Image 1 (cartoon, helix red, strand yellow):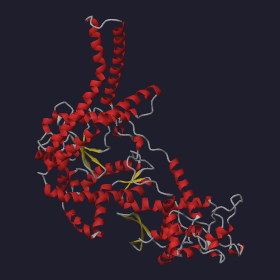
Image 2 (tube, one colour; image 1 turned 90 degrees about the vertical axis):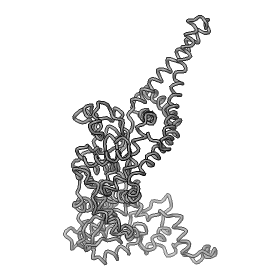
Image 3 (cartoon, helix red, strand yellow; image 1 turned 90 degrees about the horizontal axis):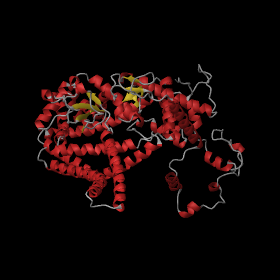
Image 4 (cartoon, helix red, strand yellow; image 1 turned 180 degrees about the horizontal axis):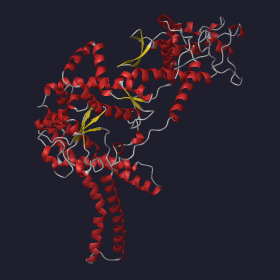
Length: 630
């Protein structure tokens, strides 16, 4: 370990963690020491008598129980499998140039080289210790892949694994990647110090013991023992938490200080690309990949999609114009022998982590290429949502508006949706005037509204009665202010028809998801070794959900939008498309329709179809014509 200030601080904190471990061992040995003293006093005729004999028996029994408990806890801490990040391993023969770059970087930094390289579908890079027996490769492969001929000794290497964010390889240039990885690789120096390595192993063992004790799938007797083990492990973790955090900060400070001597100027520029890649990756996952995952398709070239998304961003954003000029330089993905294969593996892992998809391809979980995305994902998504919307309308008893000129007069139409969600004139006033008492049977939200002739002439709201006191006028509050206050007090109020339809849609979607077959849990590999999924909790998938569950109003808006897009494709010649930054897009005359969302929200939230009808009329979309569903 070098003489950096951070490295010395990290070692001091590591020693503090080890002292806590020593104190815990001393507490466990204290009853045994007392028992030894009492037994030795009895054999030397110094501590004799009935009282000392009873004390020896009690203390010896307590010491035996404490030693047994301490041994069990120590065994669990040592054998518990620490958490490991899900990654895509990269062998040296699959990326010799990348291994050579990392080896050269470690040599320039004068630190040990990482033992291996792995990729993660995220915009981050770090070192991960995988020296635990549960994480290691088979015995015949235990060698340091980056250390050359000197790494052929038969022992488990102590160097950590270098984990690189896969989007970095596709968006960054080779020089930028080297500059970004320099502080990460420099961390292998402090990590190799025996005190820091021992402190990290102790903390990881405690964390793994807590996770093991939290497993409830055991009999009551083991569950009680696990509760005690978990209590002790959590107590020790709380005691060394601050020291462990400061130790890691010291290691990071030491690595950053050492890395300043390598590509420091390039690193300042490369940090801008890190933020840009993160923004593009997040947008690609939430807007483009997530709709495909929900349709049972996973894009097989997500990392290549990051480049397309950020290139599109540079075209739209004048501040990002300079970023596109970098694309003429050599990308870091050229350091891989087969970038497409690695991209596909990282894309499948991203689908597992962020959506919880299966680990292998199948009839309901197939890869999709970007060229097939509009037809395989966008078109199917819109027609599936439109079909679900009409199934719910059928269940609610909403009648169809037949078109005698159509091939299928009773087919699904957009007019049916527009008419159902449209709020009739003075609907609120009619509802207040004709609403039955709580004990009187009334109409359902989907029943047709009462005609004006069926309403008594004098049945009108109190605010329209000339004899009613004008309290708002007396208070100096105008109608616009009152509307603003009502909107602030009731921001999420929907019309009765909208609320009912949205609730039924949400219930229908929940039933479909519950009826879907669960993803198969992969077992052990044919070689008998534990598969990659055995190193992390498969039951917790998705580990990193991209978005919270959609609200009922958002679901309804999405389904109405899908119905509008289906009508546009079937009656006006529109096409499904892919926008790299916004996901599924409707192309009308080769141009993306960007003004549809506010018109759909006007219908869904306010029951006002006029903006949407005007938009449909301008584009020549005929809502009365039946559309094709899946």
